[in-house]
Length: 307
Image 1 (cartoon, rainbow, N blue to C red):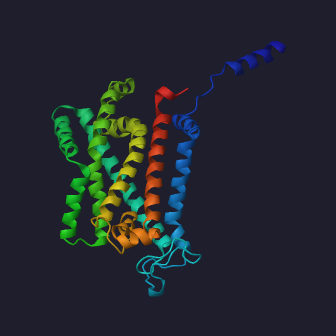
Image 2: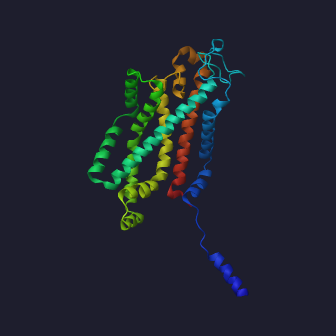
Image 3: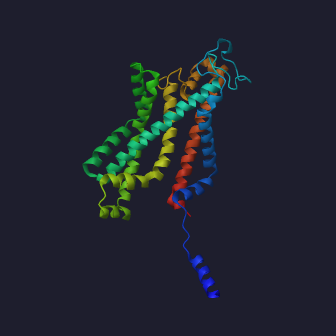
């Protein structure tokens, strides 16, 4: 009896403990990075404020009030009012919806385009690789912001309505963002093609489409996550720059960039700082938080840092 129980205990101790998944390991390492976690909490807070906060505001977004023009911050208007008597805090929250949506949408489009073209280029090589990579090289050789300024100026000349301009800006930003991502994914695919699991797909006779979409691209997800965070930050800055110059999102639709346009006026810049300091501060904190979170994800997903 004793020998049987001892054998059972020995069997239990000899069992192989299942190691946690990649995502659990990544989350555990990410939790140790205080700056990345603080950035994550701040970004969640910004999303909640931008997308839920306006529903609790007692003010209507575009309703003007002559009696409240250029009022400083008070208990009634926490961040003051603008040149049309509109509540700055309400517009700041609605502007967050626009700026964050543009950043996320352009990031998603650039990830889809860049990962697909990079995977196709790395998998097929030859003439396909040469055509895609030379196109990426051409786009990367053109400075991104001047190209965006030219395209935005064309939209202004054609008097494109503001409701359509949002979607066009998303496409423009993704058009500028995909070449660098495609080169990174291509390098990953070239390495993954030599792995043993790809040899198994050859033996199973899987189609090229299944190999690329179900085996190669999913293995580049850690890289895509890191690049995605950095792309969102870059897209928010580019949209803010375009809107600040009057070439992006145009009033009355608010964005963080066109709210910063108040700094163009000397009187507003000097005597009414509540018009431009809040959007400038939000842009700064959001972009820094996204970059810190991206650095944290990069370190958490780095195989060299796994223990």
